[in-house]
Image 1 (spheres, rainbow, N blue to C red):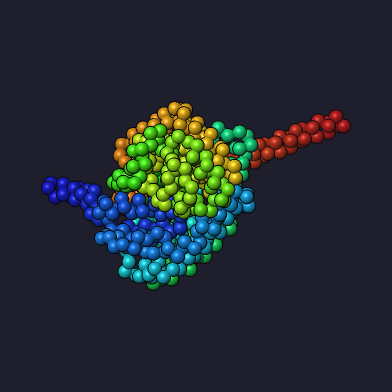
Image 2 (image 1 turned 45 degrees about the horizontal axis):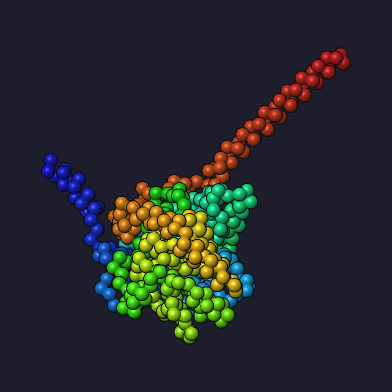
Length: 519
Ligand SMILES: *[C@@H]1O[C@H](CO)[C@@H](O)[C@H](O)[C@H]1NC(C)=O
């Protein structure tokens, strides 16, 4: 009897505790916010005791126990953000939301990442082993090749609110009638025109990706992983099979920030996991500014991907002048020293953003509206003014405006005027602060913190060898079957057949009667 008990208990115990796992984290996109998110994930996994190998464009180059950094910082040269200048947006020379442009950048990035010496070292080492690979999804699905190579589960992470391009990897596309594409500004309920546009977006982008992008990336996939698999005496599974074999999707999202999107079982919203609770208090010089700010502090930072020094001189002067007329203190994160500063304006090259947002005297945050910044504002309950510049920022800002804790100001040569109006509105109308405090409550009211949740699900996937029980059956049902087009076709064929038979009968009856008449 004892033997049987042990037979039951031993596998259960070994299933419920993994000591430490070897995890490969792949976050190669050379955008600072992507780096911050990757760093956050790595920090959490290390704290949970795991061994992490981290392919990153932002290596710290310091040595940590348990962490091996794989430096792909040469990717910085390819950053689309470094090639877009604020004046070209002001002059409307580029459309910052042009997706096909991003996609070309992604192909170059895949090439430059996977053929680099440091990454090749891992790939071509037949002794290298991992228990799981966590790869950022950003158009590129190349990191799925690692899962084939190391024969381990694949976990995606997405930096954005859930959208159809990521859900299709683990379940199906989101319905375009009420889920906005990440590039559009539309918010449901859609008008007829918007609904058609959303549908068109999906059809156009799906076609573009499947017939243009994926085949090109597949070539890189085969060139990179084919020889490495051969070295291990195995053959490379098809790119299609690997892309759609993810165990989990970690999403940098939460319902307090986005909309109540219907999601598959293996999508886990972990928005906010990048926020390190151990942030330091304000440094002395900043603390003095806050202490002296009788009417509160306006914090202005356009994030790390848009350099304020690219702002035209005239606009800079206008902004300074306008800030000077405010009774609030203004803390401006800016990369250069300006002369003739008004008394209430303080420029800092770097600001400890979390400590600034956590300070009760911060009354409004002027931001480019990147998703990490919007998450931080909800985390700390600070209303915002969004000046979107790039990619998904337009959508993020519009969503915060619709939620009622933000104003949007567009980048223009005359924006100082609009910005002042927006600041006064946010500060003097209590509804913005009240709304963001309400969302902050929803955001914090989770059974566990996003960081704990992340670690839990990663370990769950490793323990259960890829968590096949979480996978959606929708993944393998073709679209025409979901829409019952096959049934419709069958019914049409049936109706047609009945029509033909009836016609024949009728015709032959008529012939018989006419024959009879003639006789
Ligand atoms: C898909 O993932 C599962 C679980 O990680 C794994 O067992 C399987 O081998 C993978 N399929 C392919 C084609 O690699």
